[in-house]
Amino acid sequence: MPELNISKLHSDPHPLPHGIMQTNPRPIYYIDAREPGHSQTAFDNNEDNPRQQTEVKYIQADENVRITLERAYPLGRRYRRSTPNSELLVFNVAPRALRANEQQNRVRIAPRECLLEVTINDAVFMVPAHTAQAIAIRLTDGNHHVVIAPEVKKTVLIDMIGTGNRIETGAGIVHIDAHTGTHQIVVGSGPVLIDKGDAVVNVTGTACLAASPPGSSSTAMPKTMHDWPGP
Image 1 (cartoon, rainbow, N blue to C red):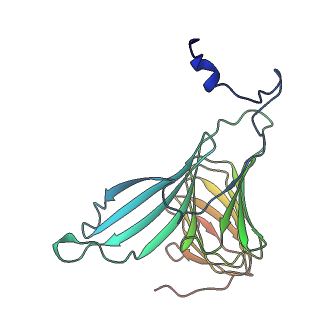
Image 2: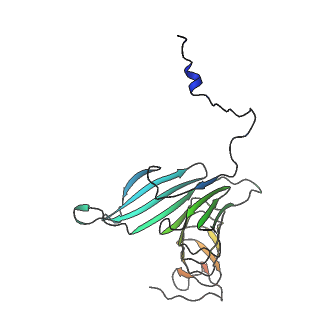
Image 3: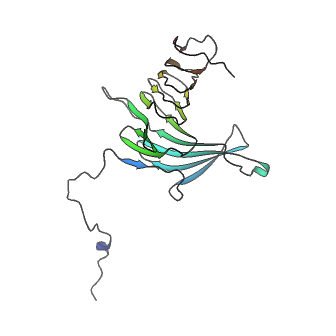
């Protein structure tokens, strides 16, 4: 009996010709955070709140973005987990070194039929509108341009460091944490809550709730803004 050639069992029956680029420059991913069996899960005990545990489910990761589903569980008697009180689909945008004349990192959230289309640079992620309570965008460096289409009513959380970020919001609630740097925010029809930390935030638009001390000069508030009372 002739010896079996094992290498043929693992070869591609339809190999592509040499020289053809196999990497899709504009990939499209369909994300369903509730689908089991396609993720890795880690648990993080909350040091600030020892009666709460955070479950982090890793869904997608590449050099462009890391996507996680994060649920916060209150801990009851004997530290047993209760029903989660928050659920976020988080897009952790990777930092990118900017060169001369290079465009800003672009993040866009727009409706696409019954889905939400989240674009991170050239990668497109299709997300069911019911997935998680909110979408979170974490920007780990500056010079980002984040656009939320006017039709989007999904709650969006944006956590950013660095400087030179420009945010355009839509019809839903948007909560922005701007820790440092100087940023521009254009407010859409939905309410926007801003926690600016040590950042300088220039705001234009129709409605804004700024978490800053009264009379602070580091938040520029246009005359068209409505004054929202604090808690």
